[in-house]
Length: 304
Image (cartoon, rainbow, N blue to C red; front, side, top):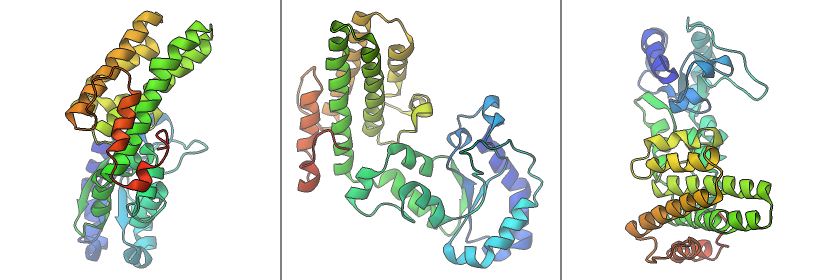
């Protein structure tokens, strides 16, 4: 059983009865689920995942007011539940389960107690932080406070910000994959060429998630997360080939061009570029020109 399924089962077996018996006044106000750091929150965990930074349990999210009134007692009650042993923590690990304030949970990822309120905040937030804040599942949220923030983070990114981030990823793809990779090889700099290839894959992943209107997980899971993308997830195979397949330069360059052509087609399908260019740089500027906010449009094309 994976972590998300186990968390739901533990809540139903132990958490729900505990709330009903000891904190009936919280039943209609508390949010319960599992989200945040850890492969189990993405549904990507396996047996190997349980060797460190893994806790058997679930999250209980409270409003500020309810945390002041019930937080200590609820934490004590949660710790008394027979949830079973987890694993040890690494130096940077922390227990993701237990009682949290909704505001504190989101502040960890966004720097504020809720969703960003300005385009500057949205632009500065890394995709992996937004992915961690919105992964997992919410088992119940009668009050709706936790879910309201979650929905804003999932679907509330301003379209101009998406375009700005996308323009930056597209020009990175053009520079690293369509230009620098082959030039580094011609210079005899094979190590630099490999680094450019990795930069291309990272930028391509970023562009794909933005085109799918999804938040990209951090490096460890960015390719795995593509399996759930309905339109462009199939490109995972080609991206992994660039990293792990044959090191034939001509073959790799062909794969790079095929990937760029596929993304250019999706840009046209979404009305983000009208061009038929093979090179992604002019597509990046076409996307940038479609930004309505003049301050955002005036930023350097690679910013974002």
